[in-house]
Amino acid sequence: MTTVWQRLRQLFTPATDAPPDGAAVTAAIAEVRAANLSYCGPPKLENVAEAALAVRAANVRGSWLEAGVALGGSAILLGRLKPRGVPLDLYDVFGMIPPPGAGDGEDAHRRYAEIVSGASKGLGGDTYYGYVDDLQQKVIANLRRFDVVPERDRVRLHPGLFEATLRPAGPVALAHVDCDWYDSVRVCIERIAPQMPVGGIVVFDDYSSYSGCRRAVDEWLATTDDFAPVFHRRSLGVRRAR
Ligand SMILES: C[S@@+](CC[C@H](N)C(=O)[O-])C[C@H]1O[C@@H](n2cnc3c(N)ncnc32)[C@H](O)[C@@H]1O
Image (cartoon, rainbow, N blue to C red; front, side, top):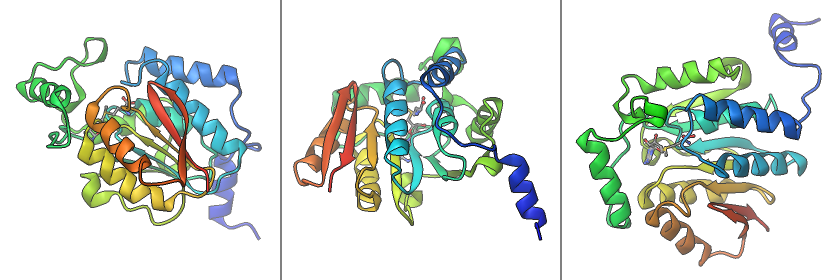
C-alpha cells in the first residue's frame, strides 16, 4: 500500500533524474549571473559544474556541500545539478563575513577593511550581501526563485560559523569551498577531507583570488598523497585519488 509520504515523493520526484546536458548547464549559469547572485565569475561557476557532473558520472556516493553561500548563486547551480535524492548542505554565517586572521595576507585585510567601512559595493549595483538584513531568508527566496525548493530537494541551511556548524556526519562527494580567508578554508579542509570517498572533489573558489586560501590549500596538499589537483582555472579542483 502506498503511504501518503510515498505518494508525495512520487508527485515531487521527476520520472527520470538524468544529469543536465551541456545546454542546460550553460543556461543555469547564465541565469544565475544575469540575476547578480554569484561572485563566482568565469570560469568559476563552470568549474563547479564540471566537478558536479564528474562526481555524478563517477557515481561517487555522498552528500554535496557548500561552505560560503553569500546570496546563494553557486548554491542554486549546485541545487540544479545534483541528483534529487542527494542532500545539499549550505554553510554560512548568513551575515557579515568574519574577519581574516594572521594566516592571511594584506589583500584579505584590505578587502575586509573596505567591507566593514560600509563602502563595499554589491553585484550590479545591488546592496552588498553583508549589509543585507536577514540574508538567510533572502537566500531561501533566491533558491526558490530558481526552482531549488529546500524541503523538496533536500537542501539544508546551516547558519553560523563553520567552526561551530561544519561537521559532516557521512560521506561528502562534492564540496564547494568559497570562503576567502585562511582560517575558514583550513577548517573546511580539516572537517571535509576525512569524509570524502575516492573520486570526491573539493573546489576551492579562492585559490587564485586570496593569499590565505592558497596558503591553506598548499599547506594541506604538501601533507597528503590522498588528494591531487584535477584542474586549476582560477579555482582549484582537488580530487581524492586513494
Ligand atoms: C565569497 S562569499 C560566497 C560566494 C558565493 N558562493 C557566490 O556564489 O557568490 C563567502 C561567504 O563565506 C562566508 N564565510 C567565510 N568564512 C566563514 C566562516 N568561518 N563561517 C561561516 N561563513 C563564512 C561569508 O560570510 C560569505 O557569505
